[in-house]
Length: 194
Image (tube, rainbow, N blue to C red; front, side):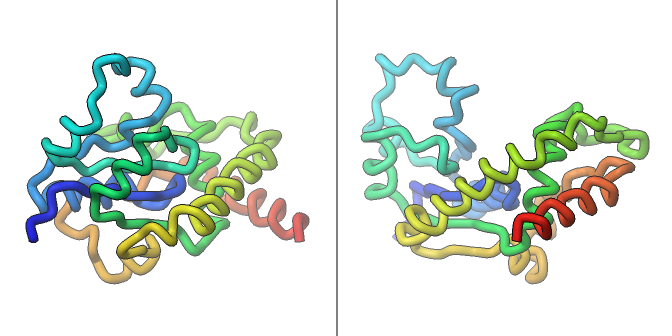
């Protein structure tokens, strides 16, 4: 059976963008990435949107816990091979989430740029709790609601160890020069939460 429709269910900072790119190349189908992300969906003409046309054309679509749009979600899941990707190491995931949200660039904007002088400003300190709450909620939704829908579910750490990303355009997101300081604050925050 030829696979033409793939949904990837994920939480943030799990390697899902590269995972989708690899699946797209493996199966020769277009990667729509986060098709239902608010940033992109605001630009779509929903009155002209036809889910059946999308299903016929084939796709890789990534859906995050805060991007579930009904009735499209249920239709896509029923019409697709569903994969999941998550991250075991919450400390690394939260650190990455804070850096991506509080840094000056989103991940794709740094390709080919000098990363040695990139530093996260101190404004991230007061947002650790806010980002923790969001990511914890997203991860809970992933494991409670998304994971049971997945044909296969992968841990980011296992994919890295198995060299799954080798030969793709996957790049570990750049780390600011003060990465260790940020990570230590995240570690302290998580320790104090226990």
